[in-house]
Length: 98
Image (cartoon, rainbow, N blue to C red; front, top):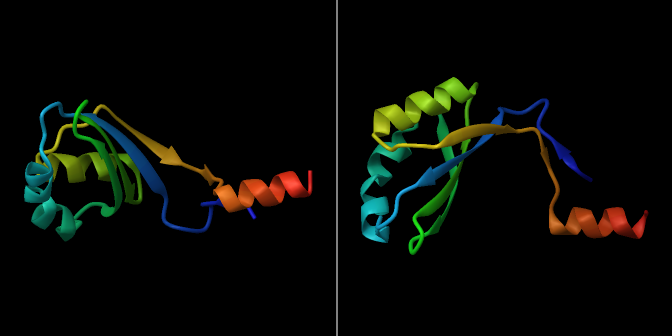
């Protein structure tokens, strides 16, 4: 049903503001991001018009994610651990049994 991350490597969601960053510039970070020295990249969501960026990483700690951003040279506004997720399918199941 709903997912808790207690037994897995922790997930972290980070927020960034980079107005004017193009998809090509984002791709330019790819080789360094793929190395995953301190944290492992999982997902990226971007609004290129506003410059709003959300990324998801696996790491042992928020400090490790911060180290990874410093290594790659990508600024961030915040890093938050995710300890609970709920998919659309899980929500439907929850409501059906509610």
